[in-house]
Image (tube, rainbow over all chains, first blue to last red; front, side, top):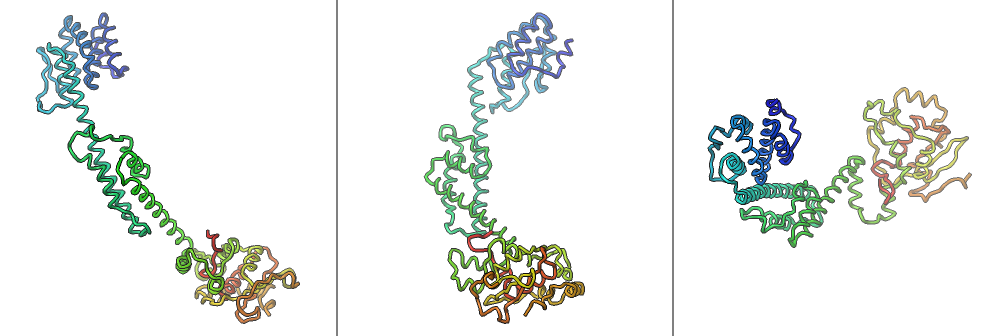
Length: 380
Length: 61
């Protein structure tokens, strides 16, 4: 029963009070369970570094020790292996005593518990407070280092954006650097930090985004904050614009059109010049127009002329020809005819498309012959 | 018949000029492939190539 209770893994309590309560309850009944519970409470005290509960635990363990010393010493083997337990007491492991750390506090707690020396709570609490402060200082230094890294990354990002598209209002990197240095310089020094800095710990865990920067700037009290914040946002906007432009270039990849757009951007094109070189259609007509010039990449050059992938409806071609032609109207029967007037500067036709149209394959020739709507009939 | 015709201001010359292209649309609901090729060729001959025909200004895609 005793061994079972000591070796059980399902420790249902995770606080000192419940284990001490169990120990006190079992003192009159099962001595083994009571000792086990005391030791669990004691180990929790060590782990959480809360020595104020140790006197109560020590009293209980002393009561059990008086009744059965051998069992008590054997149960102490539950403690970590580095503590050598003998009949004389607890021997602490050899280590450098000059530095005061968490382990030393735990050792001292065990020493005070198991030996006759009185527990000095005030000293303990002071030392524990110092230790906790040191831990927090270390964390803050790490966070400051992380912030530095993030700032460097953001600088690189801004540099890349500037290289890609030189903005009209160039970003003042020096002002950014100075603002970041102002913030980061606080954390470089080894001076105690808590008195000098009001640190916003929530902002430290964020990723380097706009919100992250906003939080940093809102927390800092430097004078350069509004400038650098707006600059960073401008940089992001410019990056997005560059991406959009690239996408447009891919989808409508006409270099000439882009050049013309750049030239005429923000200016009204004179009507005569517009007529001379370009022709502007409404959306629906333009989509129909595009159908005629879409290329089927999967088709071979010979099959290119058949273009089975395209279907143009009568209504669509009517729309297009109405938009393009100078004259449009009914023809013989239910047919309709249109007259396309040429542009002033008609560009030369592309060789592949022209060849495909001029030299149709034998199948297409047969189609011409078989269909009643040959061009010869209607062309005058 | 003439009233039904939609006339636009001519850009150059008259419809009888040599570069004018006549296009006849048959009664079919869908154009046959050979007509599509013919129309494309006539569009190109008239100068309506993809690098010269665009969507209306201020209504870009």
